[in-house]
Length: 190
Image (cartoon, rainbow, N blue to C red; front, side, top):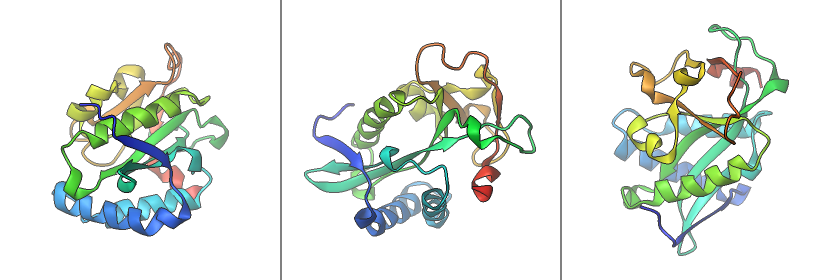
């Protein structure tokens, strides 16, 4: 369901505390696997590093109030399963984390805000967008299993199901000839 009452805008430092509260509550109440602290730490880590894209880190608004948050950050693939990457080859954007305010879950806000953000991501020079998550949801947005495109997961949750690591082309054919591994430790070296 696409909603016409949802807008997105880039996050600002004035939003950071509200975003952290939203993410903690959403993950604690709706995931069953996280209290949200790891996701808040990831947001802070991304913001502090070289891969942060303030132009692609969004809040979703409903009637002027923040009801969602998501980030797209630059992400280089690794040529090997155990790491090693060239930061100059950040061909991808990584979509993570994604949160909708707990009182507004399952109302079409997540799908609407992500469709708007993915359209902005397609206007960049990146080859594609990566996400790790519920393939039932992300497949509806156009994501496909990344291994089908030569992009392989190496760790994370919930990778006991290979379809949970997904990618999307920015433009038709943009993933042609690209392969590699998703190794998250590149954030630690950013």
